[in-house]
Length: 412
Image (cartoon, rainbow, N blue to C red):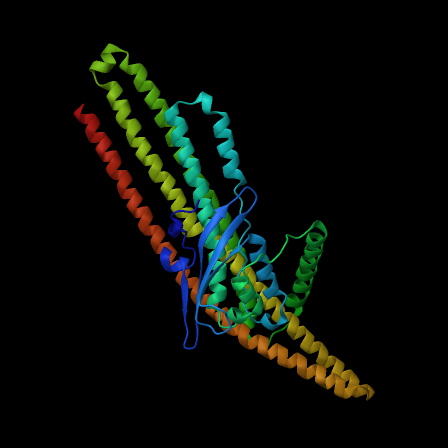
C-alpha cells in the first residue's frame, strides 16, 4: 500500500529523505528511528518502526516492530505523566488517522459511476485515490516525526518506555480510552485550565525570562491557531477553484462537440478553439490543485504542528508555575512551623525538596524553550522559502500555458 513512502511530507526541517530517517550524532551513542512501512486497514493503521542504534541499552543494533496509533499515544502520555520530565518540552502526539472523508468520497463515486463517462470516472477516481494516499503519507510522517524528536532528545531517548516501544516485538496491548477514562481526562483538563488561570494570573515571577515566555507563548499560541484557521480557508479556496476549472472545462468540451456539428462553426474553427481552451483549463486545474497541496503541506501542516507544539510549551510553563506555587506554599508552612515550634525539621525538608524541584525544572525548562525558538524559526524559514519557490514555479507555468493557448487560437 505504501510504495513510494519516501515522498512523506516535510513539516519540520530538512529534505524529505532527512525527515524520514533522522540520525542523532552524539559523542557517545547514536540512534536513528524511521517508519519503514505502513499498512492501512479498515479501522487502523499498522506502522513498521525501524531502529538502528549503537546504544548499549538495546539488545540489538538493527530491528523493527509493528505499532498502532494507540501505542504512540500511550508513549506520549507516559512522558507527560512522569514527573522526571516536568521541565522538558514533550513533543505533541501524532493525530489519529482519519480517512473517513476520502473513503466516503470513493464510495459515492462508485455509486455514481453509471451517470459518468468512463473518462470522467477514471479521472475522478485517480484524484480521490491520490488524495487518500496523500493523507496516508502525511499520517505516517507525523507519527515518524514524533519518534524522531524523542530519539533526538538526550534525556527522552533513554526512557525505559521508549526502549520498550522500539524494541518489544509483541503487541503492547494498549487500548484506546473508554468513556469513563475520557470523561476523567476531560475533568482533569478543565481542572488544569482553572488552576492555570488562577496561578498564572496572580503569580509574580522574579525570573524575567519566564515572565516574558508566559506572555509571549499565550499570544503566540492564540495567533498561530488563528493563522491555521485562515490558511485552511485559503487551501479550501484553491481546491474549490480547481473544481470550478474542471466544471468549466467539462462544459466547454461538451459545447465543442455541439459546435462541431454546426458546419459554419466547424469551418471557422470555433470548436477547435473551445477544445484548446478546454485543454488549457485542464492544465491550470492541475496547477491549482498542486498549489492547494503545496500550501497545505508547507504551511497549513506546519502551522497546525507548531500550534500543538506551542501548547506543549504552555504546558511546560504551567508545570513550572505549579512547582513555584508549591515552593511558595512550603515557605509559608515553614514559617508557620517555626512560629508554632513544631515539625520544623519536616517543614525544612519539604521546603528544600520543593526548592530543588523548582530550580531543576526552571533550568531544564529555560533550555527547552530556548531550543524551541531556534527550531521554530528554522522550520518556518525553510518552509516559507520552499512554498514561495513552488508558487513562483506554478505561476510561471500557468502564465506560459495561457500564452500558448492565446497563440494557438490566433493561428486558427
